[in-house]
Image (tube, rainbow, N blue to C red):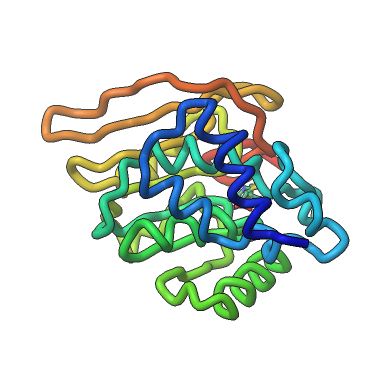
Length: 213
Ligand code: SAM
């Protein structure tokens, strides 16, 4: 299969027509081999316009959702980013292309191990995958310039707001268990502002400051 051509079609038919404009984001989506972050039987569907199963009841997010969330982060290249919900490692790879350093937390050990292997074998050496409850963040590496939560949460966990640096941006799907809306928080010296974006459906963020099991 010509995966490079499938990536080009994904960008041209799924991302550009829906309003993704940041050239750096489009370039990263053209570049990162999404099919290598899913199991072999699923690889031919990796560039379809949908989320796909990755095992352990979890999913790799729809390409458009990865692109929107990444665009909302307004990455310029020098940021330290925290991702909560490594899953397959694909979003982390896209972030790795666009930022300086990425810390990504996954609560399911088996997924963290697999994502770490994929990221390492593809040379994304600026991504660090950590197993644990991402709702508590990573205080020892804070503050972060950007934080992205890639699982649905009833509210933005307080520790993550605290670990966001000044002039930082946090993007997360917030809402009910089966339907959320992307929100973007910006932290300034005057406090935190909140904007609402695309409706979405993510698997739940399960942890101390998210949903209970
Ligand atoms: N970003 C991923 C990708 O590119 O494949 C997709 C993430 S998937 C939609 C959500 C992930 O969040 C799942 O792998 C799930 O196990 C993980 N998750 C849920 N609650 C978590 C928590 N408290 N801390 C860390 N990861 C969590």
